Amino acid sequence: MITLDNVSKTYGSGPGAVQALKDIDLQVPKGTIHGVIGLSGAGKSTLIRCVNLLERPSAGRVIIDGQELTAMDAAALRQARHQCGMIFQHFNLLTNRTVYDNVALPLELMGQSRQTIRERVLPLLEMTGLADKTKQYPAQLSGGQKQRVAIARALASRPKVLLCDEATSALDPQTTASILTLLQEINQQLGLTILLITHEMEVVKTICHRVGLISDGRLVEDADVGDFFTAPGTQLGREFLNDFLKLEAPQALIERLEPEPGETTHPVVRLTFSGDSVSTPLISRLAREHGIDVSILQAKVESIQGRTLGLMIAELMGSASQTQQALTTLESFDLQVEVMGHVQRTD
Amino acid sequence: MSSALIDLVWQSTLETLYMVAVAGILSALVGVPLGVLLYVTRPRQILAQPVVNTILGIVTNVGRSVPFIILLVAIIPFTRMIVGSSIGTNAAAVPLTIAAIPFVARLVEGALNEVSPGLVEAAQSMGATPMQIIMKVLLPEARGGIINGLTITIVALVSYSAMAGAVGGGGLGDLGIRYGYNRFNPTVMLITVVVLVVMVQLFQSLGDYLVRKSDHK
Image 1 (cartoon, rainbow over the protein chains, first blue to last red):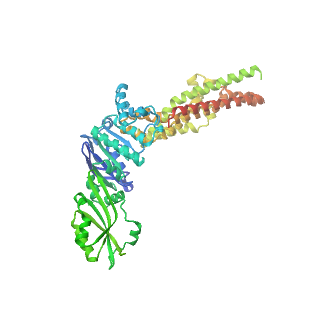
Image 2: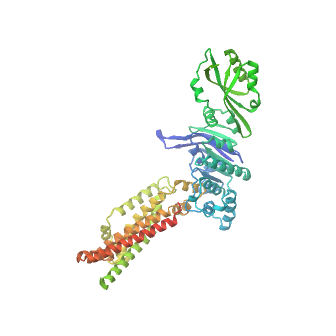
Image 3: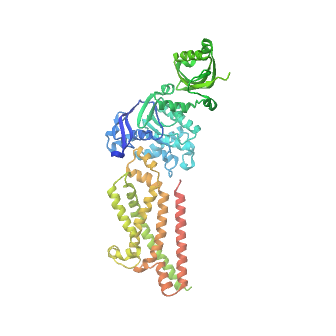
């Protein structure tokens, strides 16, 4: 439904030029929710604004629903934009229009009759839970309600694609959840293709089917959400994941960690389980087969798009040869093992 | 206070109101579109035309930098062409209008500048034409600021109209100079000032009321 073909965007020219996007290739199939995540300044915003040509790419092609936007003149592009709704971080509602009139705006721009506008706007306000707010002005609404108005407005022209530019970044976690639920309903009920950019892993985890990771203007990862959360392919992806899972060893333990093993130390390991390894009774097997004790310091289980992801930080307590064998056994399983360091035994 | 004096004050008040009304309406009719042009032709704006923008900017600045009393006499040939005479209340309304147009234009440009660029972007993402953006986004969203600018213009026109006496335009300022200053009549001076103060207060209050009513920010 959306295809970015080798899209680049450069601001300025000569030695002072800034390359915001570098050779981006992205495919978003019909009916999917595709997230793009990245740090601030990575080029996320430029990327989504290149899709409906609010920013014109310096090179490359943008194709939506078989139409090449980058080849269109201004009038054709305006027509094509009716197929492509957009919502924004700061909602961008017209302050001097009521909720009803804000949602009616795209239809007014298309020259629809008052009757048609009415028939379209009222069901949208119903769907977004704003039926009792039609005559209010945006200043009287909460952030979540404003974004609902913006969503209704973006849907008024019956687009095939919805672009979300940090749509939940200005909202509190509870409101974010309700907006994400709404987006998911829209995706399922209307079959709308959604491309969203965000810096929040929570958003990706909750509603996205696929996720792209953008870093320094390049798309460095593009994967199924389940794969990305269980085995990110890049260091930045792992950082995002660790940050999101917040599985940090207790501070007291970190202070005791030594980089090299000694005569009287135990290894501390971080284990990441996914897929089949989640259900393996691993800890008891280690204890039984290698005669060691396993002290679980931190553990967490997440369910992401129907897949389970387990994380654990544990101290392997036993003699040097026992723990070494245990580590070898661990590595033979389908899971990631990282030795974080070694602590002096206290027993 | 004699009834003759009351008549004189009343007559002068009407002259002032007439000049302010004519200049206010005409300068708004020309100044608002000019202000819109000044804004939308800026670089990176919806109708970016850097050359046009620079020329319009220079013309506007020239208009604003000529002292009103000089403009009043400098454009006498033009005034004669428009109203057929270079003296009288109508003749005074012409330079007042000319002086107010660039003033209005800059205030409107400033009001439009206060509209969040995100709103223009949202309208663009919906496929709005530049004209639709002006009529449905920029002007309605800047409504409060524009009304505020027009109020400032009206108040400035009340003050400028005091100089209309120089071309026989009449009005309260002229009354104050001729009767109050030249004939050493402090009562007349005081009355004209009081009437002017009340007039300005009323215009400002009306403007503030309209801003409050029209703006939902």
